[in-house]
Image (cartoon, rainbow, N blue to C red; front, top):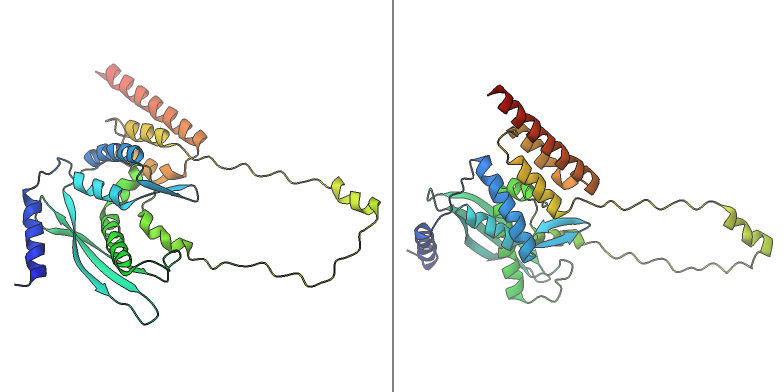
Length: 264
């Protein structure tokens, strides 16, 4: 038996002996409670990264979500796929379920020094990032909806590095001669034109608003269909719409509870 196989088997055996949380990924009511806890944990420990106004969870946050469900990552392999001009590593990670003792997911990822900001990375850092991305990718494949339910984007923050690989565009150098200054009257004319008003920036719902919405969605009188619809759109809500959503949920809960009391 190879050393790699022995190490993997030992890891799985140790994982089986670990204490497993009571959350069940197959039950939406339990995982929604986990989403509330997850949102607080990520916020308190600053485990997210903001990209263009949206929050993406770091791999540590994904690992926390997995650990609460008894799902741990195991690195299967890290392969050097470098060329003469590029330092590049590929990693594969599988997810092991402590409850069932079976593999429940996998993820592949690569990292290269050709990426934006990684030109001077040492080899061990490129290899390490490939593993980190593979862990995040594996969890994303099975837990993306829980991360979204917690109010965050369902893509690991480490994958967003690819979005920065935009070549810098330099403005062309002006070659035409400078025009002679226009008469004073003509110079004042443009000032008479109306300046278009700037569009107000959209302020998305705060983490506190999202947590309140998730808490209300966990109420027994809210249907599963209503939960699903709201969770799929929670990251698109601005502050005003989030406030309206909270008010509607509270009213629906009050109305349904009063209706049940009257019926009883």
